[in-house]
Image: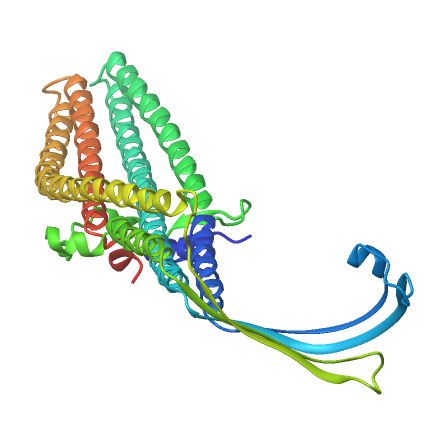
Length: 416
């Protein structure tokens, strides 16, 4: 297949569309909605129809425990037909209402879990894409160093050919050239590996090659347009919203356990046409109002209350832990972003100075003022400066993503 060229935004949107974890999270929300429908059905009247035909033979002696003079020992066999409907409706049962409310909270929990999965998927794709951009930048820098090493080798060879340079200078330049070629091979391998990992996250066809459409944007340092306040993070982070919705469901389950002590009122009924055959069938019916009062449940209600109370206490502790983690994430991300931006500025100045040093050392070598040891050292200094710049840019972009993740705005920043 043709290569799949993706920008960072395209990669994020593709992951949100076909990543298996995101699909499973969407199915979890749909499952919670069906669980709510099941809980709601328990609040509604239940109506059913029934058609039956029976053949009976009864032992009167066994039924009454004695033989009745003048009557046969048995009756039948006889048959009868019946067709009708029955219904049951819970008029007053607060436990069913609490369970329905709890199922609605379950939907909120599933949606928060879905958002968590989406945010994590975006974070993984962004990090891998940034890693691929870094690998592409390393390949470009390595190729540039190979070109520079080739030019220095050609320069040394020309000077030796004209009787100005020495063989050791040419040999030293050739060694440096081979070292740079080896680094280029390693860099290309790392880029291929990073692209394979990105394709795995995007769940694309393994035979389809993924290419970066905006590798140049790796060198940009845009401003971070996200709300960095803790209040915004507490509102947006799906992990905290998931804990809060679970607390609401646990509260409803506690109230449902308490309401289990209350009486329950229901009505039942049955109406049918019944007879030995369809020609002599007559209407029969039975209607009843029921009042169920729990007297002794073997400690079940108290155990359900205790379980719900323990769940609430656990969720309270988890909420505090999540809030503390969010505070740490936001503060750490802000500090790392500021530091990374300063590193980028320093690295940019460093690479400019390193390039000037290479140019001046080449001029000195060309003029015969010095040998190419100075040129090789300047070339190594340029390589370190280039590595520092790429590392600083990667840390800046990753810190930017970490900050967006810490305040729950990954999808808003990278997918829209």
